[in-house]
Length: 362
Ligand SMILES: [Zn+2]
Image (cartoon, rainbow, N blue to C red; front, side, top):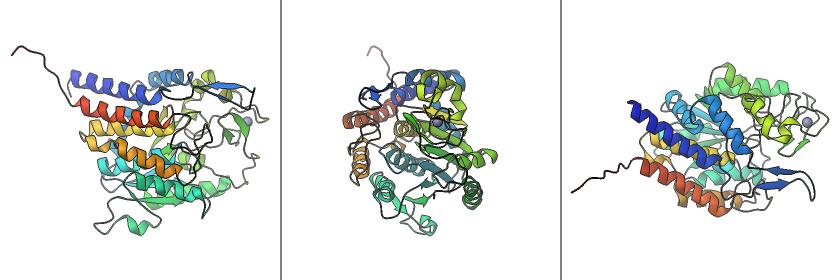
């Protein structure tokens, strides 16, 4: 690669990063109860700036490059997400699609959900929107001409710390994934407490309590030197301990969770690469765009029509937007149009990056 090629690639990555980390088309504040404390999204851009400086390379590009290097045909990739709001399932589904189309990988989406609930349906429906076939049985991942686009949805139960540690080792032994990507997967802070985006404890802190636990899985993956990538937009998502010092400067609830634990909301686990974006979904779309670029395959980036289907499928099982709490095909207080335009802009940025213009006299 020439020096110019490298500069063009970094420039491309920076454009993609800025698209997905900027709160364009997004409600800028959330107020915790009427008259309560106001949380602004704008400070999140400073979190991105410092994280970009820390890693020394565009974050979505770095993630795509590491995925390309680590993941070969037929390798499993774990995607860890939540099933209960609009930020998570759509990004996971779109990312799963890009891993298949771009790298011939086999995605496994891990999430916690109750059986026969809308939360059980949100991820499969998002995957269907993303042109994939969700399956619940590993045997359906291969073996026929109808299996190349299947994706395994695996239920991760509520567990004690000890049980989660054992289950993490077991599932890593079983699949030997080459990468693990977290998409809006909230996990405990260093005091063992899970918090919402606006602070407030969600569990007792007792390690024997059976709750959704992701830190144990991420830490087990890190120990095995499996590539770990975390996406998030608040700091309470697993993997964000990597940038805890940055989070504390710009996010009041990361510095002070406002609950007796006093640990701040930042997750206790670290990831190799952390992408603080306008939403976790948008970070996934950014990784897709960079994969499309470095693989020279624009089709790795899903299009606007597919995107509309993903968002509608997820919302239409009754899943709320995590910011507004309304059941809309949107993410974290960004409008539906903004979500559509962002994917359109990413896709056009990929397509136009292959166009070279020459000005000359005839
Ligand atoms: Zn707390």
